[in-house]
Image (cartoon, rainbow, N blue to C red; front, side, top):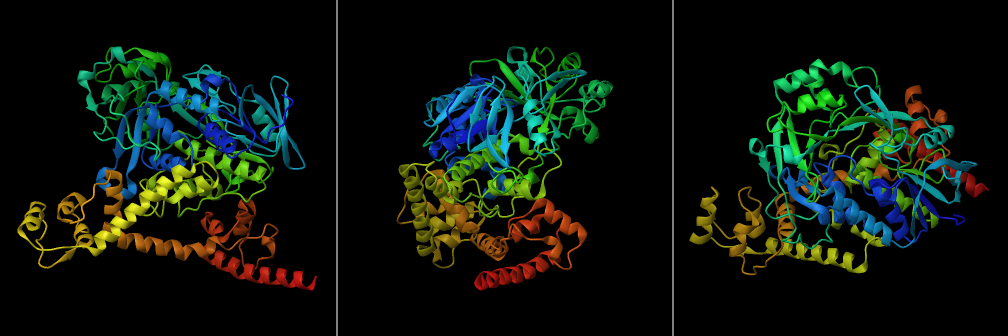
Length: 631
């Protein structure tokens, strides 16, 4: 290993994979350092991709040229669209994956990728001089030079596994953790916090009585995650999940043993996941609930293992066996592997710029759970952005930052870097202000030009997206120009939908705006009938039905965009800005926002303070120009 690499990726999880593939595909000589090559792409927790707010992230990763969506489509054993009754703006895709097939697909892509080398080793130290990364040292004694480093350690940074009172050093059950790297990061002046997550026990499906559970089947017409997946093959085998639930006996067993839970015995003080709590947390926080759902999710086609989503726990194995067997359908179940709680190191994400480089050390990027997030999708999104920016830095190009108005990824990273997080961060649709225009279905339209620009999407792939949206635009315009006339045929269909009959010639677009009318109803009355895929029909419907709301949201974006464009100079002295409170000065110094938009989103920075800053910056820039002219 005497060679010099441009970029080194530490870790082979979801963030590490996206970072490494992005950098390598952009022509940067990349090294991925991971403990074991055969765990690259491992799904450490539940075997699923997507979910509410998370499906949008996967679609955006795909639109930018990432791999997660393709991997999900190839390995899926169930597809479901969530929130279908709530409108397109919050619909999210989710799939159940074959855990083994997902990992093998990712490993196959990584192994074939040009400019990417995989090294089985552990990074023990970061080499930094003058605030600049120069390389890394490994546990096997290697010194490897590079221009920048992306750390994607997941739960391995100071990871400790808790099963009851038993504590094991490790980042995943049966695998080591990374202590020396955490020490090296701390020595650079970073604070290393501890966050907690967990996983449920794995169950032997042969010992589950599914007849006592409620089946949950795949959608009849699966919608792929990737716009590059033309269709899901009809012979791709899809499996049902099953739903059961806890009961009073389950709760009593857990309550009686709460003192053995690492979180409640005082053994762990790390901050846990509010939105994906352990079963112990659920009973503490929702004591009035008589039952909690358990989703029995198959782990793959060639295994009998099931993942009981909803009962993550750190209780001792014997207690896990007791409470699991109190559940309907699980009376005789065999636990294959116990559930456990895990605490791991986190660097406060406010230490990062919006392009995920640390403010203290140039060339050091962080992505994934090390930034305080939870979930494969959040990790993959950060990894992709960090990989792109690491490559751009090597190429001496400007960093790439997505705005809140154009992506869920932009919201995710902006939230982390301007607000920070005091608990594991999970993406939700409710975090996104502009979700009418930032939707799952139009991610390729919003972001694929960036993927093409960076060389992550081919000319052919990008041309296909452009053609798709040309057709959608043409059809929307056609409906806005074409009228349907009153008559028994159309009126009969409208009456069936409890919709008023036509009294005069009506534009098809106006008819489609009626809540009870859809594209399928008007299509037979369009003289220029065309057949489009459902995903395209859905977009045509949405753009027409909600065009007033969409237009208003676009005006909101335009109104706030101007403060995003007002840059804050790196050499600004906040102590010289008059009328700012001491507290606001301290926050601005700590977060070092790049523009007024970021400053505006820092908790506690008031609108009045933004106005003061705006006036000061105008004077600051005027004086700076005058000084340059005099010089």
